[in-house]
Length: 118
Image (cartoon, rainbow, N blue to C red; front, side, top):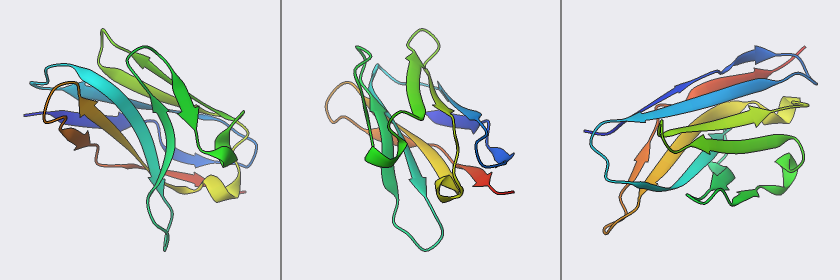
């Protein structure tokens, strides 16, 4: 059984930083793509950042230049460094990983709350 354990959320003032971590454990063949999503109250879940096994990244426009996604393939862990946080970044953040073989199953973390407020 595959489990994703997220950590690093919390309350931070505008302009502050947080680093989210998501550790994958259990029986998973190989992880291809790792992603971070977020969902704010009353809004749909949106993709924030994505990284493939080779380290190629892509970001949602509003976080470009502020957030950095990275991964440790040996430890099956993905990170999201969030800098210059804004109140509109407040949301529950979820990690998502995709297995690198057919049927390319995806797995979700339980979510971690990030609140940006003064």
